[in-house]
Length: 185
Image (cartoon, rainbow, N blue to C red; front, side, top):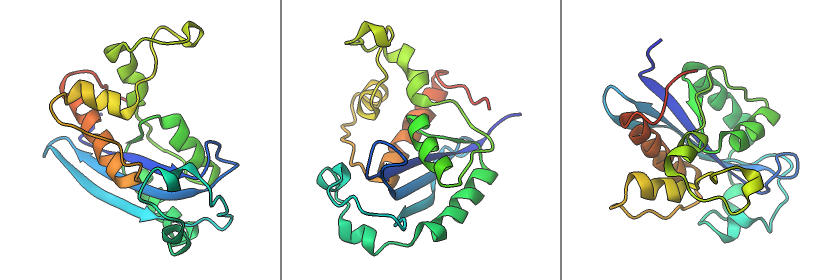
């Protein structure tokens, strides 16, 4: 089956582990390969009912504020929108295991899952691994991948879900264009 459109998701959270924190922002875009466009599907700050991590890293390292989250739509309002998008499109995320684990713990399952671009780019970028026990090459960060594929376009990750999502989508599109990303489910 030829895939012409797929979704890329990015989330921001208050903790590294999905059972310890909450999702505070979700960004999802569609990559339209035929028209060479990235289309916004969802860009929302979100508040889970158990939100409590007021000292989370995200609030010190992005423009997202605690007040933004406290005034955001509740998870139960946003979750059905995410589920509907995941039903319509094949989906991926940069560091897919992180994002999909969080979403699965909150009742959002992927139907058609594409490869993780971070893992796919590991053997292309061949960044040295500081700890050889973890493998030959390290998993590239988004900024490292961006620098490889777009060396003349500066980028600094904002750690805001939709902004990160569209940059990750651009990386995936460029990987696909160069034959570095396989669109197989």
